[in-house]
Image (cartoon, rainbow, N blue to C red):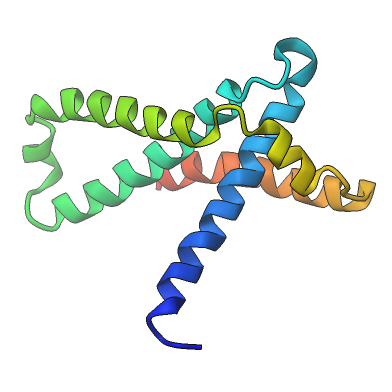
Length: 133
C-alpha cells in the first residue's frame, strides 16, 4: 500500500461512519417521514458543526485569548453561513440515497444493529461532550 493512499482511505472510512449515522437516523424516522434523509442530514450537520467549531476555537485561542474572541461579532454570522453550507453539502450527498444505504446495511443481524445503534447514539452525544470540555 502506498503512503499517499492512506489519507484517502481514512477519509473514505469517515464517510462510511457518516453514511451509517444518516442511515440509522433516517431509519428511525422512517415511519413518520418515509425514506427522506433530511433528519439524518440535520443530525449529521449538527455533529460535524460542533466538532468543527470546537477545533476552530482551539486553534483561534492559540492566537487570541477567549476574552478577545468573545468580541468578534462576525463569528456568529460566519457560523450560520458555515452551518448552511455544511447542511447543503450533506443534503446534496444524501438526497435520495436511502435505498442505497438500506441495501448496504439492511441485512444487519439484530446484535449488530443493537451494538451499532449504541455507537451511533454515542457518536451523537460525543460532540456535545467535546464542546463542553
